[in-house]
Every structure is written in C-alpha cells, then in structure tokens.
Image (cartoon, rainbow, N blue to C red; front, side):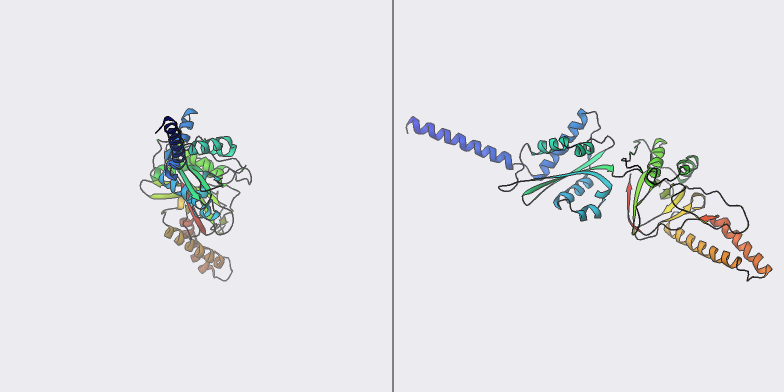
Length: 356
C-alpha cells in the first residue's frame, strides 16, 4: 500500500472520527442530564450574584416535568399546584429531524432565560429556596420548565407579594398563637379594593408571625363561584392545624345577633377559619372557637340558625309576657356561647393550597 493511499485513509478516518464525536455530542445527553445541568448552572449564577443556592425538590421536579410533557397545557396548570407557584416555561422547535440534546444545550437555555427579562426575574428571585426542572421532547420540539417555591400571588396594587421566611421560626402552641394574634393589629387595617386586599392581610400576618419566630403558612383558596381568597395556617403543637383569617373591615359584613336591647358589640376581625375541599368556608370569632374541627363549625352554624329562629319568635309579638321572659333567658344563654355577631359562609371550597 503506497503512502498516498495511507494518507487518504488516515484523512478519511479522521473525518469519520470527527463526525462520530460531533454526533455523539449532539445525542449524548438525556432529558434528565439536561435538567441536572440547568439546575447546576442556575445555582452557579445565583451564587455569583450573592443569592442563596436552590435546593432540588422532587415534588417541584414532578410539576415541571408534567408541565413540559403536556406542552404547558392549561389543564395541567389548573389541576396542579403549579398555578400557585412561580415558574419559567419556554420551548425550542427543531427542523430537519428529531431534537438533539447536546453538551451545550443546558447553557444555551439558561442564557436564553437570562436574555429574557421576565424569565430572568423569576430565575433570580431572592426569596426562592427550592426548585424543580423538567425537560420533555414532544414531536419536533423540546419543552423546558423550571418551578420555584415562590408564591405566585399579587397584592392589591398588582405588585408581587414578598413573603419573609425565618429559618428559625417554630410551630407555636395554641395559647402562644392566640396571644400573638391578640397583640397583632393586622386585622385593624381596612380592606380597600385595589389597594389592600385579602392577599395583603395574609402576607402581612405571615411576615409578622415569621419575624416573631412563629412558623406560618400562606393559604390560597378557590371557590365554586366568586374570587379566590387568602388567609394563614399555623401547625400548632397542641391543637394541630389552625386556619386564621385576619381580613379586616370592608371585606365581609357581619350578621348581628344583638337584638335584646343591648349595645352593639365591637367586631374583632381575627377569626378562626374552617375550610376543606367541597365544604363551605366558615368563620368563627377568635375568642369563641373552642375547637378547630369542621364538625364544631357545623354545630356552630346550627346553633346560630336556632338563635335566629328564637330571635324571630321573641320579636313576633305572639308570646305572653311569661313566655317571652323564658325565651329571653334562653337567648341570653345562647348569646353567651355564640357572641353577638356572625359571618356567613363565603362559599364552597374547590381547592386549598398551603404555602409553608
């Protein structure tokens, strides 16, 4: 074999090896490997900017993967916790064959996010503590989603809510929580549509409780009809999960049960809330809530219905003086238990999400 043939074969071999290497680079990475690279690259960037490192959360990964695999369908977003959390979603369409995930794929996607203001803002949110990444190949496109453990909620003026998280905060006892609520004046703020709404009340109480060392959850609730609502959750050490609604005057009127010639009472807008999917959202004044089970609320509502029936009878003019006096004593006993005002249910809950 002469030198010319050997040289040509060597050149051909080099070209062939280069093509193999190039093809290998283009097809060597799985979607999982690209997800992992995106996670690392985002954390590297956050560290460079002085932001905290994000923990990888398997639940957030699952949400991100569901979203990408569905091509960001509204059904997935509306039927999962994804709609309550901030997330970035984008896709890349390929022509001339199946999509290829190569060595530079993850960096290219992170760079794209950094060049897109709304994606960059979410990626670099300072309060984020955990994240999940999902990559899916569907047809001739690759779909990318990154989910963050940051609440996707806005204040009354449209600005994003900022929740303060205290790593040292702990679960309180019911007595400790009640004492904090009595001292706190969040519920004294007026409800002003478009300015200070239920989300602002829940965020304010959340941040104040966390600053006081009390672990707090921000709760989002959806109803079968009407706007969504926000409140707070506390996992008490002795009484379990307690929902607190501190939305102030102007949001919901109270029904007065004070019909026995006594002065009108002052309304306390710190309330224990009773909620569950498929159940009416109910409220009981803080000082009258002796149990946090929904059955207690149902019994409470029955007692109020009885009280209102007896008030109607008392005011009907059909009773003798003696009967009216006896009924008045019954009403006074009920009022000592129930108080002098009552909130009507806000509606049937279709979804409830606690953001701890």
